[in-house]
Structure formats: C-alpha cells, structure tokens
Amino acid sequence: MVPVGSGTLTYVKSITFDCADALVVARFWAAALGGELDEDATAEKAYIEAPGWGGPNLWFQRVPEPSVAKNRMHFDLRAPGGDVPAEVARLSSLGATVVTPGELTVMADPEGNIFCVES
Image (tube, rainbow, N blue to C red):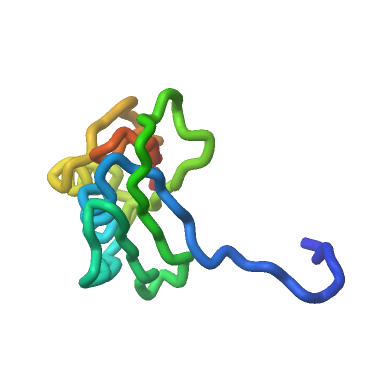
C-alpha cells in the first residue's frame, strides 16, 4: 500500500452509535467484543474502551429519532477459530438476531444495527 497524505495521519478514535437506549446497545457490544463498559454509562450515553484487539473506542448516544433504513457501515467480525456457528450462537445468547444465515452470517444487535460474522 502506498501512503497518501503529508505524513501526518488521522486515525479513528471512536465509532459512535445512535440508539434509542445507549446502555442496552453498549452492554451488547461490550460483551460481544470483550470491552469494558464505562461505569458512568446510562440510557442516554455509554462508552466502551477498546479491549486488547486495538480497535477504536465505541460511543453510544441516545437520539430521539428511530433508525429508518439499513446502516450503511457495519462491523465484520471474525469468528474465533473460524467457527461461525458457535460465534453466531454466542452472539445470539447476548441478544443479537440472525438476519441471513450462511458462511458469512448477517446479524443484528439488540436495536437492529447490522453486522456480519465470518470465518
């Protein structure tokens, strides 16, 4: 890959989810990714610091309007050991639902945010 820019890079500090209940969605993603839910988390706002996987932090904020369409950006999660069915079962037990099963399984978190699980 060839770097683009002047040498000073911008990085992703956090990814923000708009939610009806920030605490519900944050609890799901903290359990799914192994992150630490901030002790001051509420239904209004919640924060998860990235665990050892080194990704960006996750912010969750309550917004008044509902989601009206499919999210245009989503996570692709790699199933540990390539075991997609086991990871789908684990995420389902945390509150996710299967949207489209398969080798690349499309799922939704408790508020319907789409993500994929693959080997």
